[in-house]
Figure 1 (cartoon, rainbow, N blue to C red):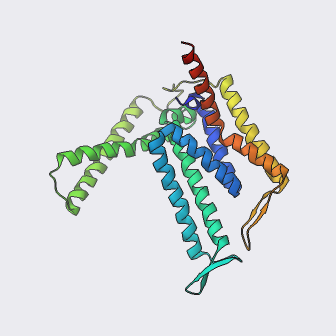
Figure 2: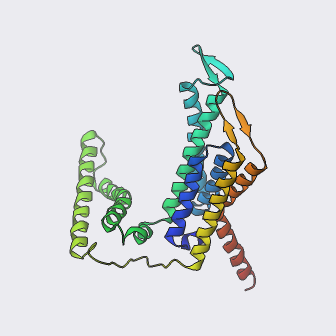
Figure 3: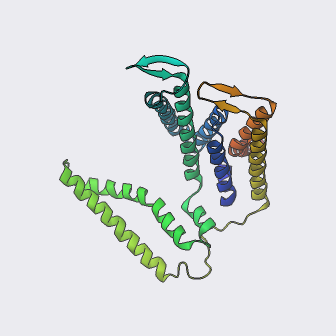
Length: 283
């Protein structure tokens, strides 16, 4: 039961924009770790434990890969661990690679949660009245990959059990043909239905209510307060030429505010879960 999914698309988009922006603006290990845990738990809640663990595990492996890759190409830093071919493998380069991997994995997890919540209907609800052509093309692009996957399964079932470049190229040509034909038919159909000419209605009709305003206000307040505290505190980390952390009380307050920001969806869902369990227990 994902209650966060029921909020207005504008409030949901605002949350993910703020979460990704904080990760990109502040290259801080504490913020990146908080974001990774928060987004990972939210992804597990949305996708289920088995699927979520597999995906989060792949993200961790990618972060480790960035660690080793950076140590091989970047030899900056004052703390040499070992020498390979006369080139130093430094702790600073390894730490920087790990932070880079965490930044990328945090973004991937955030976009994974975003893709599960923000459907094409919600995107068209936000941009359909202002950019109708873009909304139509974007919604078609979102459904292109799943449709091609289904068409590939049908073609594979209809073909004899054989392998080869010729067979695969033929199936690829058929898939491209199906996609172009469907896109052309949909474009012509939407054109003669009057899409983009005048005011339109949305299949996802939802007004921005007070609950959505509270959610948007909480996101803006947590993000703005956290950014102000972090900038004022001067907290952070210097990686080169050696690793040096800078923390104080204002920085700790900023980390707490960012933790609140990242965990807003799970707090909303946990509140509804507790409320639902109380109702069930009284039956």
